[in-house]
Image 1 (cartoon, rainbow, N blue to C red):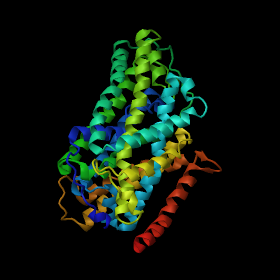
Image 2 (image 1 turned 90 degrees about the vertical axis):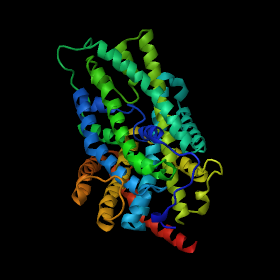
Image 3 (image 1 turned 180 degrees about the vertical axis):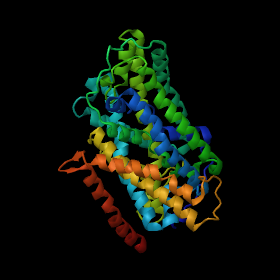
Length: 447
C-alpha cells in the first residue's frame, strides 16, 4: 500500500469539532507555559510583539496549509500521505523521518517542563535522578492513556484545557485590577537580551498545527471540521498567550524576574505572599504540570500514527501496525515511540527546542511544498477548503515560515551539543534520512 492510498480507519466514535480544537490546542500550546523565556529575553513589549507577529508569519500560514490539505486528503498518517502523494514516496518518507526524529526532542520537552514545575512546588521530589525517572513515568502514563483511543484523548483535552487555564484567568484579572505597584522611576534594563532566541521560543510555542492531520481517519466530517478547528485553535492559542503577559506587564514587575518554569514566581511577585498569592502560585504550578502532561498525551496520539502507517506501507516491521482490538489505537507504535522519547530526557530545555524547531520546521516546509505540488499536479482535485490566490497564494503562504526557519538555522549555530553545535548535529540527523529510506525500501521490496 502506498502513502497515497492509506485507508481511513473505521471507528464507532470519531473526534468532533470541540475535542479536535482542544487536542490541537495541546499539540500546539498546552497553555502559556514556556513563554517565560520570551519575556526574559525580549521584555514585555518585545514579548507581546513577538507573540502577535509570530502567529501571523508562522501559525496562520501553517493553519491555512493544514486546512486545505487535511480537508482534501483526510488520510490516516496526515502529512506523510500529503507529501507522498504530491512529491513521491521518497519525500513522503523524508517527511515522516524528520517528524519522527524531531519528535524525539519535542516529546522530551514536556516531561522536562513537568519536572521543572514540580521542582518549583516540591524541590526535594525532583532532586538528583528522581526528576529523570518522573519524566520517564510521565511518558509511560501518556502511552497507557493513549491505548484508550483518539476520542478519549480529545474529550479529556477539553477538561484539561479548562483546568490549566483557570489560574491564568485569576492572575490576569488580579493584575488588571492592581496595575503599576512595581513601577520604578526608570525602566529596568534586561540582563539577557536575546530577541532572536525569543522568536525561536515563540516558534516552538506556535508549532504543531499539522500534528492533528495524522488522525484524520478518526475525525468526524474532516472536510468541514479541520478548517474550523484550525481557525478556532489559532485564536485560542494567541489569546491565551498574550493576555496573561499583557496583564502582568501592567503591574511593572521586572522582566528579569521571569525564568523557565517561573509562572508561580511571577504570581507571587504580582499578588504577594499572602494566602491568595500562594493559592494562585500553586494552581499555576499544577497547571504547568497539567499542560505538559496534556501536550505529551495529545502528541503521543498524533505521532504514534506515523510509524503505524509506515509499517502498513512496508517501511517498518508489520508488527508496529498492530492495533488494539477495541480502541483501534496502534499500541505497538505507541510503546516503541515512548521508549525513543524517554531516551532524550537528559537534554537541556534550550537544546531540545533548537533541535525540535530545526527538524520539525524542515518537515513543515516539505508540507508547504506539497501544497504547491498538488496545486500544479492535480488542479482538478476536490478541495473543500483552499488557500486563496491560486498557485501564487500557495507559494506565498510558505515564504514567511521559510524565513523564520532560516533564522532558526542561524541561531542553532550558537547552541553546543557535545563537540559540535546544534545545527551540525541536526544536519547529521537530516542526512541519515536518505540512508534510512534506502534501507526501508530494500526491506519493503523483500516483504
